[in-house]
Length: 203
Ligand SMILES: O=C(O)CCC(=O)C(=O)O
Ligand SMILES: [Mn+2]
Image 1 (cartoon, rainbow, N blue to C red):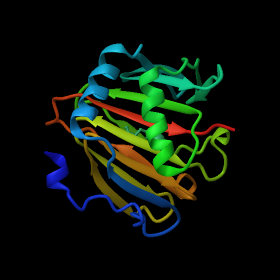
Image 2 (image 1 turned 180 degrees about the vertical axis):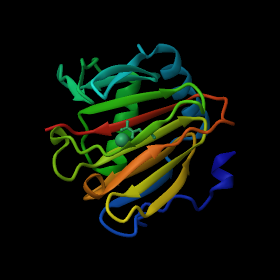
Image 3 (image 1 turned 90 degrees about the vertical axis):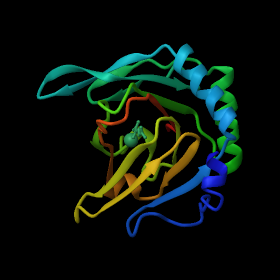
Image 4 (image 1 turned 30 degrees about the vertical axis):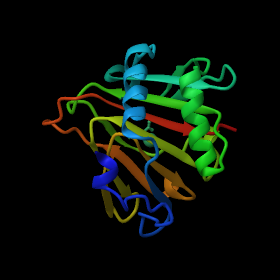
């Protein structure tokens, strides 16, 4: 069981980044069976949509799927494509409340990503759109398959890498989005799906 494997895993007071930002690992914030229920329910009942990104003026559909939830009917525009928001479900509100209580931080939006297997990933980017404010706190919950997650400093190219597991909460704060990119590399050997939830606050 993961809680035995990583008994002293939860060290949120430690900053994983060496400079120019704050990334904290809150470890496993839900019991494994609870994380299983969340994964299954989100996997089966979320109205997943393929994402679209604009590259070299072309609209391209990603294999990865997304769903965007927010307090008001707030559209989320990134990579030149607008996404209409869905109303919160009871399950997402449960997860949001648990994370808010733990972090003492309020969130009003959540982006869900579904990676069907290791052939799907997310390219280098930072979540630095103006709607998130200058120093956003972004709480990232991982469910399902374990995947590598990598940070790269925008100037020095210095990297920091970790593996994100089922039920693990990672929090990015402060200057992180201004100075670091992050990515979810493809992992050919992974044949199981992963869902990621990033809780955010738009201004
Ligand atoms: O899947 C992940 O762990 C990261 C997702 C992410 O960076 C994003 O949605 O902006
Ligand atoms: Mn991101």
